[in-house]
Amino acid sequence: MLYQLHEFQRALLSPLTAWAQAASKSFANPASALAYFPSATRLSAGYELLYRLGSGDGQTRAAQDLCSGIPPEPKRHFVAEKCGHYGIFSGRRWRAIIYPQLRDFILEHSNGKL
Image 1: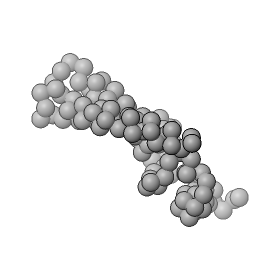
Image 2: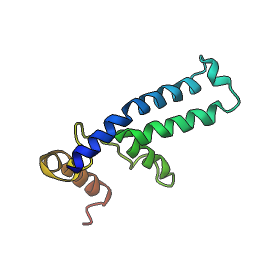
Image 3: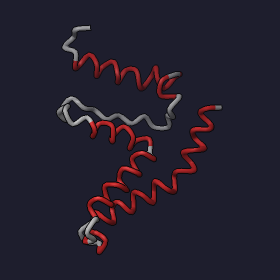
Image 4: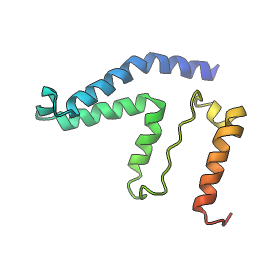
C-alpha cells in the first residue's frame, strides 16, 4: 500500500517536475531572452532544485551536490531503473542490483579494512 501511494504521488508531481526542468533550462540558456532577466541565475537554480526534488534521480544528485567537502572522485551516482523507495532496500532488486554496487563501493573505499 505504501509503495502504491508513493507511485501515485510521483505521478501527480510528474507534470510539475517536467515544467520545472523546462523553466530551469529557459532561464539558463544564453539563447533565451529569459536568461537576461536580472534574477535569471537564481530563478534557474530554484527551478533546477524543484526539478531535482521532484524526480527520484534528482534527489540523490542534489544530496551529493550538498556534500561539498567530499571531492568528486569518490562520489558515485547509480540509478536503479524501475525501483521505488521501498524496492531499493528489499527484494530481488536489492539482492541482484543494489547490494552488489553498494558492497563494491564500500570495499573500494575502505582499503579492505572491514
